[in-house]
Image (cartoon, rainbow, N blue to C red):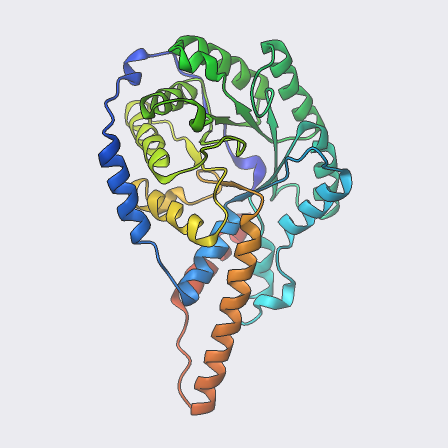
Length: 349
């Protein structure tokens, strides 16, 4: 992915007719449960899906004790999650430059540190810098203060802004008021990409989740994001499905494409595969690209690394056993498919 090639979405006029919705919670939960039961993979399939999840991740640190040093370490891990020789059996060495996270995500005060680190690693055009803003995680600040925080982050080098919406406006049903605030935030972002955090655990109902998603998309959001990761309820498949329905209806009515970002609670490769399966079966495989789908996570990369290293070791042992017996080693289709995608990405640049 080239960070600078993404176009930002346009603000569309407020249209209350898009907010009309009737959600069957039972049906939503049944669909989500069915998807989660279908997403078990193993072997080379699991390795390929784990690497795909890595390349869709916004590697995040949002701690009170963040320092320049740990942001640099975060950026190093985002750029080089595995040592170059690790994948020699599966990838050409040249393709390894494409195996990195989609972005790093930090507080505005740490954006400059991230910028300097990515500049040092020559990855500014490959790994985006996302900053949370507008009074993250609560949003309980005056509007001008929230807008100034966006400007501060962009001036420091942020290319993506993750805002939190004003939950109070959503809870009282002031959807036009929420729209007007997000429009101002869209304007403050300029050419930076806008992700709107709905904080679904604090919206009360699935209908409110749908309406908040629709309002943010009308206001010009490039992504709708489930959570801050600080709420008691974060990213769940049923909520994700409601947000996907909103994305589908918005695209049908406006022809505008909006991405999805689950955040909070996505800790394992199995969690990530469940989300990617849900997206693949509803929005299609074309949505599983950094410009349309992200994971917001701090711990997911740990499990990705564990799954990939253990999976590669197991495959190497199996191949060694086959070679010992004189059996042919079969080409690994999922990894080859991923290789083709990486080659295409590299050629496009």
